[in-house]
Length: 252
Length: 76
Length: 220
Image (cartoon, rainbow over all chains, first blue to last red; front, side, top):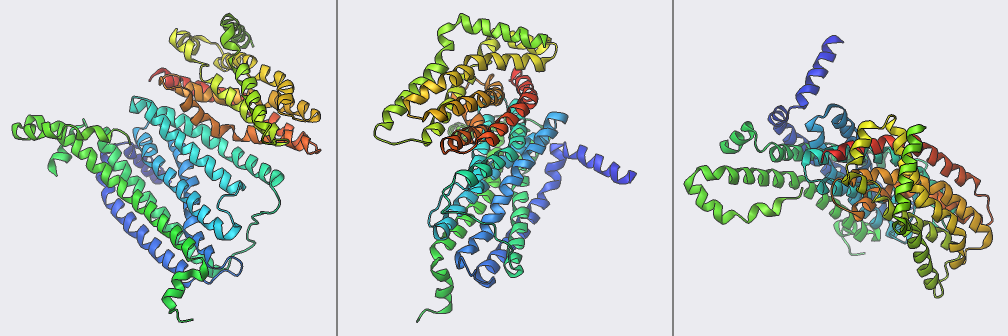
């Protein structure tokens, strides 16, 4: 117990050191990229070629295997950003700020990908790409929240200060997300023409679920790799005046 | 009925356009996200090399010609 | 309570001294509704008019809230406030309350008359005014966080709008939803209760956000 806590504390402190993180993360990035990409390939081939055809939606349901992981991670990344925001505000940890800067564009891209694949999926399924359904609307709001994070960072001239402002905004946003989701859900169930109702599928056959699990894990690992790699770039950018960065650059 | 199994598979029961465009788009997004950090790292490294260069008279001369380049990479 | 009232009185006095400026949100709301009414002669809005009015009120709020901290920041009184206000929480609430009295409150009070311009049926007017009365303080409180974040950047309204509008979604949906329910002959009390709950939550939480945002912004 004491040993585990000691290890946790030391790791946390080390994580606060850009130099330590940069030195230790190179192998991780390659590993995460390779394993993640391999899982995505396996999951996609499985989903496209071997999973059975859906009785109601035909083959268009196969979009699920790229849509759901993107949508799920888009939200998870925002929550992670807010957690990093808390860490940054409480401990003024520089790495947390750099992590936000690295993750925000990834989250935004994922949100856009989820919206776009959802739109494509909607055309054969609902007869129209865009529906003001609770989930699509919340996803759109999430996209705007990401826009806000990125715009605010660019508006504040000094990067250290921008990080604090972005942390505050991320926390305010994450407090609001459940309320936004609930209100959208409430509004769309009450005020939507009844012609389009997107019922939750009662159950999904395991043979359809496995490729989704593989793809979700692949997305997760690959994108953690992307964020770590982006974090490495941010470290070099921000620490460009540090001696160890200069000697690293010159050594290459 | 002359279609082979591959063409049939590509057609996705008539939903081929939607399925393949969604997968293509996702692949492009993933690839873009995957490449972005490497480009950012290379750009950051290049910028540091440029600022370090003036110590070296030979590199200094080439640095003058490179001047417009760092300007593009402000936003990230 | 004291800090709240002091700040409220001070900010209201300043607003009255800049009389014409304080009229801007109301003038914007009425003017935009007038344009909407003009457009309506070719385009039937009916029930949707209530929702459209809510969107206008929201825009008016975004435009107004941007300047909430600008002048205080320039003359240094914002820094004084952060250093000296005894419960800062109360003082910030007073500041937002004063702002709301000059923007949200008149808009809510004016809305039944503006509703005439866009042909909202009479039984919807009161509900609309009530939703605005309950909803605009929430908008002001949440908007204050955005205004506080942007105050030091020298960037203006568009950035505040971008930061704050996604957070306005629940208020807008419950507000417009209540008005639409009432116009359709239903009972809007559930939505009104939700608006009240959002208001209570933002009164207790938003000042902390404004506080944190202002402290961060002081150091830009």
